[in-house]
Length: 254
Image (cartoon, rainbow, N blue to C red; front, side, top):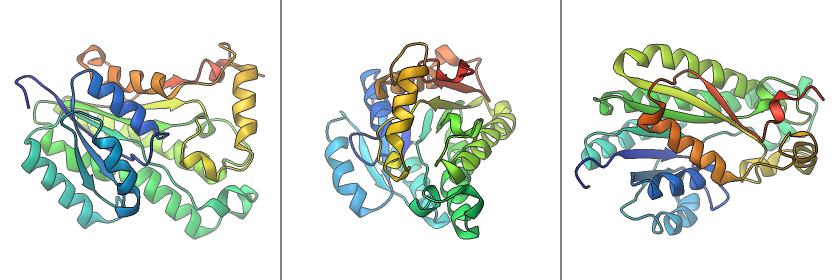
């Protein structure tokens, strides 16, 4: 690690279509040293090939549903880096069946899983990062407009994203005195691994391109650039916010 170089850890890298990968590329290009966490050995197979493309990046395995693994990975971060300056939480999941049936039929277990993985995990990693951000830092998570308006078939994930955005505000309040900023990026629909489970996802993409002021869908690199900005000193006065990177789709009434 070179003098003055900042370190960020990224959770949620699955493959080259992951928003986490776009963010990792932008941070690496900006000179950040990166620790990349993937969920399990299966996802690690592809993640390790991508990590090898990032100069000086390290890979770590962590299942965010297991408290002992979260504690262990932050011990590994502490041993490896000592201090971290940024954290990216690009994690979201609901059982596929919950996104194929009417929302009113959401199961208790499906609701629990969606909120555990998509929301509670942000609290868990923020708590783990807090003692390693001794000189302050930034935390960024990913959300979607389905948290505010009904997006057919997004179902319980919309409710989970609403909870995630509220969690961002409460964490921003708690961590603000420690100079740790917490923000969310509300990205437009992107063909990621997570998006595969959403029924009629192509309809979401088509509506985005037709109705957004920029008349197109968002590029993952644009989300990556925004995350790099939010983790940088240029965003030192921004916390508790949801920043839209959706080609303006959210401003439209119809």
